[in-house]
Length: 393
Image (cartoon, rainbow, N blue to C red; front, side):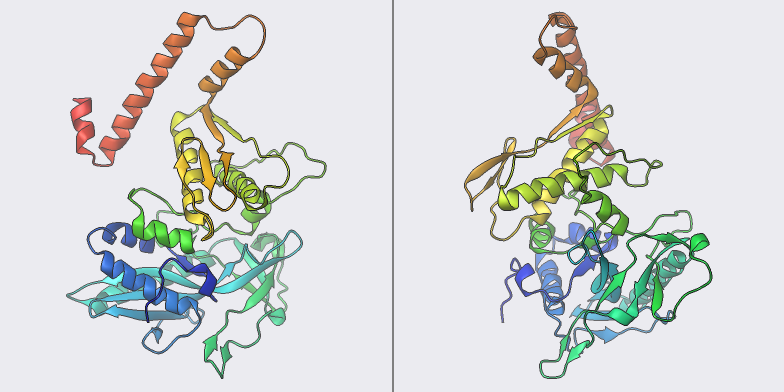
């Protein structure tokens, strides 16, 4: 039977997360072999329903006892390598209690006409290294396995696999603080880390939904990124509500995810207003001194809107607005400015004598345009654009 590729959310029993490798595979093959990409999505759609015949879930041998790896045949030369894994669940968690659930984690899509078995072995080795490196991390989550929300994994009548849900500690705790006691009902969950010994980062996973599937198959921009699934601490920051409402100071070292949490928080507030339109419309402003960071944050926010839109919404980029067909209304997007642009706007809008003269404002605008043109040209050239070489020469 034909499966509607874009009716993903309504029939999904299991969440499906993909790794960066799987995401890059779709970016590489969606134009030159769209039919293969659609076959992969169809297999994942069947897996998400919880009905797993042997052809869809052949068990793979792994040295790790806790690693449940499977392969799904796409055709004679390609396989989907995936795992039944535990992952923090934003949709089930609240401010009072965090939950994790079993998910289908797609590690890679293997395409090798010459030596398929060897290619699969290499992927398995990489997965095992990621799990081992994650277990070396000083951070872990504590999961109460005695309080599973779903007791049975399989329904004997319909042979339906049901994901199990477990309560987990709200805080990600350090091994130095946890002590030696570990009740038998509590298990430690370590997040997979990069298998590259030169890197010390935890892996990011991207949840597939209807919007994400559309992006993977129809996205025209190869550099478009899917928003990754936040962790428990990130989820807490994103949805934190201060009472009474006040400013929030978020501190952390470089690379710890401060800006990422900010973008997710902006989108969460924006999407909440799109859902019900109750209360005042959020007026959001992002200001940074770095123009490159400003463009990246703006691009990330746009990608969230593309990937997380619902089937009942028709999102149309139209200048600085997003049109919802269900309510026929325009909602203003946030402003993303550099500190220089912000100062110019304040100087023009505030009453009293202006700080910059007309000549100085024109000079500042010209400098920004020149800098933006050069930066854009260099970035395009570094990404392999031929046209940029002509412009720079």
